[in-house]
Each structure stands twice: as C-alpha cells, then as structure tokens.
Image (cartoon, rainbow, N blue to C red; front, top):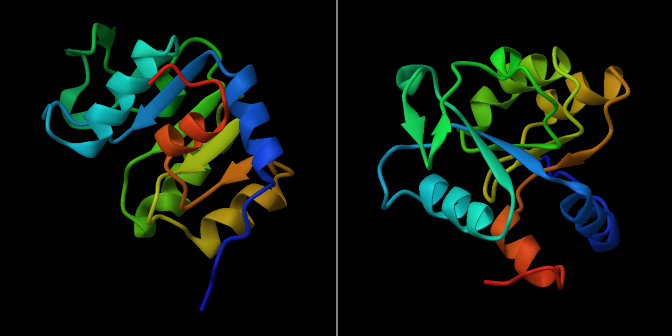
Amino acid sequence: MYEFENPSPATIFGYLKKAKTIAVVGLSNKTDRTSYLIAEGLQKNGYRIVPVNPTLKGTELLGEKVYGTLQEIPFHIDIVDIFRRSEFLPEVAHDFLETDADVFWAQLGLQSQEAEQILRSAQRDAIVMNRCIKIEYAYSGLANL
C-alpha cells in the first residue's frame, strides 16, 4: 500500500514560514466544513487565502474572490492547499504544474502516488500530503491560534 513520505518537519515549517498566499482548492462556502474552518484560521493568522472552487467562481468567500481554477489566479501562490478526494489529486497536480506555485499540499487523509509521480517528473518536489496545514502551523511555533 502506498504511503507518501513527507519532508521533515523543519522543511514543512519552512514552507509555512515563507508563505504569504495560500490557494485553497475545494474551499466550501459552508461555514461548518473543515475546508472553510481551516482557511478562516489561516486567514486570521495573516495568510492571504485564495478560494478555488469552480461552482462558486466569481463569488466571494472570506472576503476574497473565488477562482474556478488555479490557472486563473493572476498572482503568485506560495502553497496550494487541497481539499479534494485523493482520486482528484492527479488532476490538481496537472493544474499545479501550469502555475508557478511553490508547494503542493494535500490535506489530512489525502495522498496519491500518481500525483506524486506527476509532480516529481516535472521537478516540482515541494510536496506535502496527508497533513493538516492548520495542525502543522500550530506545531511550527508560528501559531497565534
């Protein structure tokens, strides 16, 4: 069975420390959903959240414009935080490769060997999978949660 091997905690904390802008793929407009709560928490801790959800494109979430795809975002993204089922991660990996985003981050419970292979074959090795960005942020010492 495939189990993604994450970078060291120091590397993950480095990603979080450097990041200013986080695209949240699959961000829900339902305020009780994990994606919404985590995005809101990150925003409260100083990150700019960029919602990505094709069904909500053109609306606003957490005071930010919602984009339909990663490729539509007209500025640099530091971390792409993904809240889509594991079977969709290869598709998101292909979208990610069409951007200059720095880190591909699949939330807790999500991982894909195919997505990892797609990213690594393009020399995009800043990958985190099966980790909650809010939990990692809390452990990083950067937190104000």
